[in-house]
Image (cartoon, rainbow, N blue to C red; front, side, top):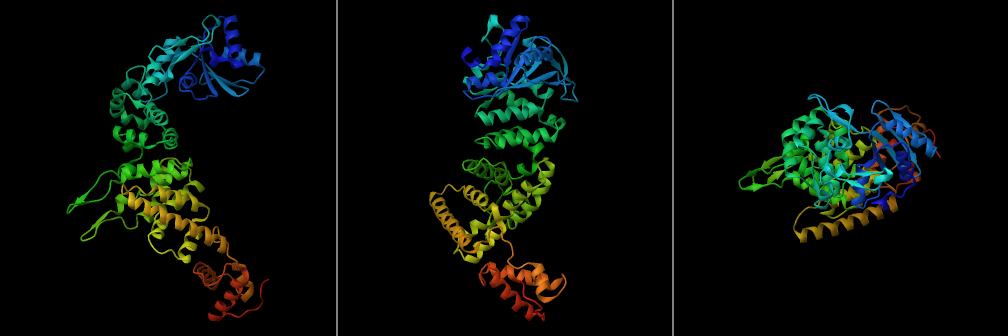
Length: 470
């Protein structure tokens, strides 16, 4: 174990612990990550006694600044490439209506008992007499070997005391591809209602970490099966299930969404593209209809879904800024490339898609490819080949016509100057006609052609040219 404690900060902590006869331990994620062979730059040090006083001594020896958080009883410092946080060993008790514990000084065993999971309760002694000794009272090493998430104490109490730990259990299982202990899963089911005392910001922070994991469906399946998803994101659970009429059923849109999410995670780490995958079919329950002789339809689910995005972002305390607008746009447009790939692709249709998607065109194409979840290999190959054709067409049209992030070659001010008119209906009519003419390929996307077109359209509606802009 000592080979993992070669950083100079450990030798300073060990020396001072010996000089002051203080027991100090590295604990938690840093120790866990040693066994997972993952690099870790954050170190938690638990001290038996006054953690802040010991941290002040360490900071003075290292000649670095110390940040003290008296309300939390912690102190932290940065040394070279590491961030080190110190805290005194504590034992905790909880009131039913709060996740804020009543904290008292405690032993190392008390401190390990209050940890969320056995794999996070591992500690390494830093005192010179026992330097590098591993303390594992809850068999966390065995759980790491078995890829198991388990609580040190009764999981019903652990999750009831701090319900955010339910989200953390699922998050760790998803990030590490571990299994949650069956007893703990049952405890989450029993305690799911307690999530209501947790702030939405903290819930969404854990949810985003699940979404950013390599295979997010692991976490969403746990969230759904335990009932947590029903509490924190009911619009998504509404996607679950299959209805049948006259023996005809539709696909289960919940599991389809999880497949699309996993698919897009193979090609991007972008959180907002992953959110677009989650929300692309979110309005299917609201638009589901059965048409005799045809089957199930979800007409307009892309428009309805786009309108749902701001409300869902507000509900989940996600940012109501350009990120939300990006997700909204991708939900709105997610069917468009699919339609193009199933028909003869016209330059006009491609120009319109480029015009509407702008800089999000690559993300839109990634979403559409991820949306292919059929098990029919022939269909998969056909759709993917067609998407390649659409992408090549997008590239060719953009190189020729420069429609992406299009700026009109003739502005409203140009039109007012040309005809000597004030801002009004005529200006709007001509601007729309210029845009449509360029998108339809009637005129090239350049200023000279657009100015000539503007003159003709102005004359058609009775305007007279008073000057020609440069």
